Image (cartoon, rainbow over all chains, first blue to last red; front, side, top):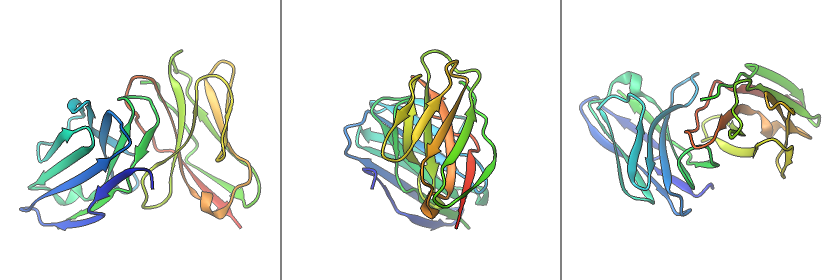
Length: 113
Length: 108
């Protein structure tokens, strides 16, 4: 256990569904991240939050909508996804945004059908 | 962001030292070198990081060249559980960005 918890671990959703991924950390970290890992591809950074403010959005389609209600929780709201969005979605946190040690959750395996 | 290059794959005999190289020739003076690994279907796991001095912890050793343009991660006694993709990244106040990494296979 890294201290970063993601739920659910697995999710299957249709293209017309709306679902949310949840990430929680009680490490006292100020920065949280969403990453996407597709098969045989390196990790792709999606969003960065620092002190609950979004500081990075790497050209992610609007069908992915992040939310950071407080420094311990991060959500990724999903709607009208495509099959190519099927991937492992990883949440991470670090003390500060940027090149400090990051702790990753186990990820949510998302399948869009 | 400084970029890193790593060999795509390596094999290592169980019980031997695994030496994973990384080139980061464009690293700037205030950027750290970080190593993570990802075992299949799990999230990345932090291993070690350093600035310019060699570092050692319970998992591995990190050797950084004097010019800081390359580094080597050393797993002193590789086990089958060390089979994973190893990522070398550099960063300071910038974000953590993973490249393709090195797929290490530890062979019995």
